[in-house]
Each structure stands twice: as C-alpha cells, then as structure tokens.
Amino acid sequence: MNKGVQRPSINSRLENMRNLSPAERLAVAAAVSLSDAEKATLSGDGALDIHRANGMIENVIGTFALPLGIATNFQVNGRDYLIPMAVEEPSVVAAASYMARIARSGGGFTTSSTAPVMRAQIRDPHGVRINILAAKDRIVDCANAKDAILVGFGGGCRDVEVHVFRSSPRGPMVIVHLLVDVREALIPLVAFGLPLSPVAAGPAAPLYNAAPRFTVDAATGAVNNLHNLLTPFEFLVYGLIGVAIAALIAYPFAMNHARTAAAFVSRYVSHEAIIGTFVGLVLVIGLWEGGLLALAVILAIGLVGGLLYRIIGFNTGMQFMGYYAALLSVPAIAKLFGG
Image (cartoon, rainbow, N blue to C red; front, side, top):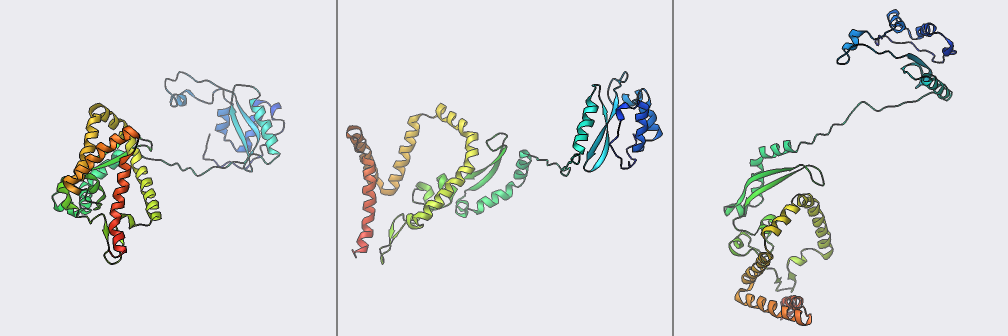
C-alpha cells in the first residue's frame, strides 16, 4: 500500500460490518482513501505476487494466503483506526472489535512512548591499557616527582606494567604496576613516603632521616611523638577513613590474586621460613635500636616469656610492653617536676 498518502480522519465505528459481503466490506475502504490499485490488490486472490515474495525470503517456491480482515471500533489516543488483521482462526477479529468497542466507551486506548533513544555502553579495558602505556613516560615522571630523595640515591620508578582482568567482583578491571627501584629501602617506607621511624634499617636509613620517636620539650615537659600529632578522635576518624578507602581499592585486586598467592605460599613457602623471616626482622630492628643489649633483651623475653606462658599461662610479652611504655614516660615526668 502507498504509505506516503496522508489518510483522512475516519470513524472506526462501523455498524453491521459482519453482515456485509467481502466486496461490500472492501467498498468501505473508501473511508481511508485506498487507491484503485490497492483495492485491486486486496480483492485479488493473491495480494503477494511471486516476484515480491522471492525478494523477501530465501528459497521461495510459492505463496501462502491468509484471510485479511479489518478490526473495527479502535480509537487510540483520540483518533479512530481500522486495524488490518491476517489470521486463520475464526472469532479473533470479532473479539478484537468487540473489546475495542468496550474500550471506546471509556475513551479508547491511550498510549505513550519515550524518545527513541538507546544507551550503548562500551567496555574497552584493552583500549584503556593502550592509552596508559602511551602515557608511560609521563607516569614515570610523575611518580619520580613524588620522591626526589629516592631518585637522588639512584632509585625511582623505572617502568609501568598494565594488566587487564576480564572478571572481578566489580567487572573488568585494569591494574597498573609501577616498577620502582627502591635502592634497598624497605617497601612500606617507599610506598608511604613518610619518615615514620628508624625502622628503615641498614642502607635505607639515610633516605629517611626521621626524628626520634620520643622527645620531651625541655621547657614545658611536653611529649612530642607521632601519637599527639592528632587528637584521639581525629586519629580514629582518619584511621577508619583510610582503612575504608584501602579496602575499597585493594579488595578487587586481592580477589584476583588471593587464590594464586595462597597456592604459592602453601606450595613453595614453609612455615619455618615465614617464622624465620619474622624473627630475622625483629632481630634487625632490635640491633638497630639498641645494639647487642637489645638482642639480649629480646632473646631473654622470648625464652623466659615462652617458658612462663607454657608452664603457668603468664604472658610476659604483654607485661614487658607495659614496662617499656612506663620506662619511656620517666623523662617526661621528671621534666614536669623539674628533674
């Protein structure tokens, strides 16, 4: 049919339509201004010729005709329509026309639609990887600008690696690895970039000329250390915020590597090696903090404390920490009383 012709307004409420002959019903089509060619097509035995059918689907050998009826009484958004229906089952057209007549008494059908706009989401982690690698030199420069001291000692960021994980709890992820030459500095100090304490033992110590952990003002007796830089409430709030942010950042990364790391440790690292590493770290820190005397104290606390805990359940390690803190408070108390 000619879809370019503007059809005039019609009244779809057609009385006695079912009692008319097919030719008489077709004559009613003048209400929608069908052309003579369109009427001839509808009145013929086959409205679909073989050539047109061959252009519609594959392997055409003929056509199959269905009755074409008109459902009446339809009123949609205040306008009347005659609805063509090609069906083989009786009563379908009559039922549709009857229900449309019932709906017509209430104002007909009302429809609405949104704008024909679709949202297309593109996930291209590999494209992000290419963009990051293209800016590798700039990333390395920015990383090295964060720690001029480390760069001055010959270290610093050397390279950038980008890894794409297709599946994670948050969907596809792109993880960037910065390869940093730490010049034998302890990794936590490099990561934070803060002179936290003399724990940076050995060759890393000059990188972070940290202030003493515990100092007392000679005039006022005020104690100056990392604990009083923030109020207890500020320390709690900012600490919790830091933990929350770290968890949000690290959780997807950890989920991608948790099984691999656990399998590697259980397969290749013995418990004795882990314990030995921890003991070695404690000894290195003790030697740096107090020399051979510190090593003797650590060994005494470990041996005696372990025996007391096994025999009578007395935790000497916890007691020692209390004694150690009390000992550090003596200079401050002495200063307060003019000692």
